[in-house]
Image 1: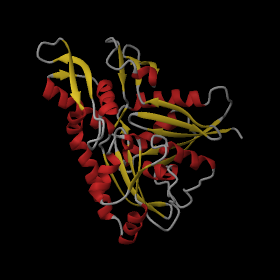
Image 2: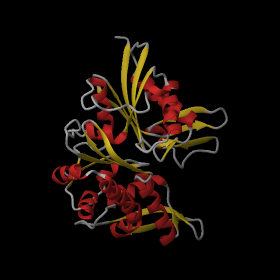
Image 3: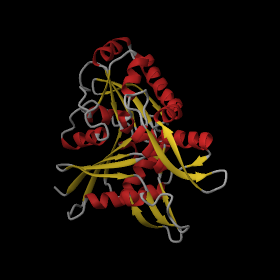
Length: 339
């Protein structure tokens, strides 16, 4: 009765937190702003994201996770502490049980870093769940059945593909390519084609507003502002949906190649199930226009987007906290061995 149960989707782009009995209570960008003079944290989440590219020399706004894993341990720990503190606000609990998600392709050292960060953030009991497993449970797939279910979770730093049967992962593939790489591809294209330097936030806006994986009806253009690389002065440029699609083509193709590899590794009986049931997309990348249709064309398998693709992973952790539904046969591969 003195334990607070918290589920965390610790993502490269965003961190989502849920609390047992309350559901999702927090959706914040995985960004921390701190003062380099004394290492004091000035802001986390949305407030810190607003500072990116706009801070004085004494303050740095950083994203402490890269490619789905911890790049800066101390800053990640500070961010988690803030999020846990908000989750516990106004309550008196002596123990914190945390379920936290990790990429399926993570190394032992990287998973240990996640565990240690959660421990230092105040968690007393920690379970680590692989993201595609949590996403499949959160999306409501019949993971406990003796049939194959395939989920593709496209996050900010990684894309995870897994085939699940009888409550555990049969085969999986992880590539460190995600929404951030699409943003970087847009930045690189505009720099090369238009001699214009733009920031991460502008690239993300372009991707959301006119980005697509396939041509779509009502394609438009957008005017963007940046710095002219020729004379260093501010400059306006108009780019089209076709240009953005061309810029993102390479990372999108790499994600689709990883899906193909996962399907090639799938046992024949489960492959037959996937043909019947299709592939389910989760994560922010699933919202890219035309991506589901492109995957269906390239694989010949029906593809659908989960009902709440951005929330699937954290909803999976919530089910683990509530009644273990969907995780009865799952082996928590890296949780207990660090205790």
